[in-house]
Picture (cartoon, rainbow, N blue to C red):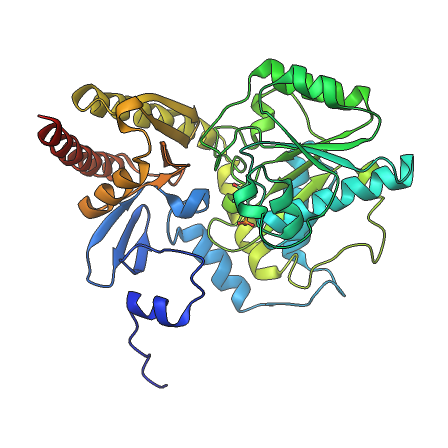
Length: 411
Ligand SMILES: *Cc1c(COP(=O)(O)O)cnc(C)c1O
């Protein structure tokens, strides 16, 4: 075999579309919650590839499932079905409200399917006037043109010409405004059961129940985007299970594949009927490799005690972040659920989440941001205590350095 070509971060600027601004390090290996870069430096991973690597890197159950399937069957397209897809669909329906599953390759595609199903159902049952999609400001639903338009940040959806129509954005957690706006024209309400990209914003329980009631009252479908919250992330298998409100359609991706690209839309038999043969599809959707890995991930996450472990780890994070904050007060609150946590910066530190991320990287710990004011943590749901302690020691040093610099500046 030919020797692999040497590449580094510089190549990104030369040959990649500049829609990302990746960090300077280039990771080459991961194990558990530790990642190594090209220079052999190690990093503790509190980011989990943005809520994806739910079992950490190269978990043995995923490696085993992937390599076994790799020697069996890679792809058949949806002209045929396949065993891993059928097994995964069985598993997902056993562990959720859903009776039916549609497989896609990403969160955006799962949401695209959800929106198309909602529109098709409303058109079939109530007629073409019932097309309004209501979603919430600061919501995030992906980057296809339909999903980015439904997402509540104009900065992401503007500048690409005419948008898909009849999409309304209303404030999250504001039941009165929603009640005043909804009508017989409302086709669906799409929401995250905990806003992730928008800043780790939890819904009031009364809001979630109220949205469900309003949807029932107006014959509108409730769509939960659980792309970030799903597959154990919040300490429930799906977040709706901890809210006491069941959606009509649910989208899932990110942690579903634990690092292998897959997404899925879950729904009921009555709704699924409206996606008849030929109405929707995806070449790679239900790919055997992806489904085999996801099956291993879902089996692990739904084992007894696994979710209790997520809740225990949430407490580790909350306690450690509070302790850092007691020493270097930069946070106003620690919020979120399970291992989808946000540390919101206080008034003096507003707008500096990226500085914290950079300082953390320099000390060898990876964190995320959610907007300019929130440091976000979406680590492996199986992170060990030793990895956690090391990561928090590094984060504490990083924040200590920033804090001291700031004190020196203002002194
Ligand atoms: C990440 C995310 C998406 C988009 O998922 P992709 O796999 O990037 O398409 C959609 N919705 C939510 C809530 C997300 O967090």
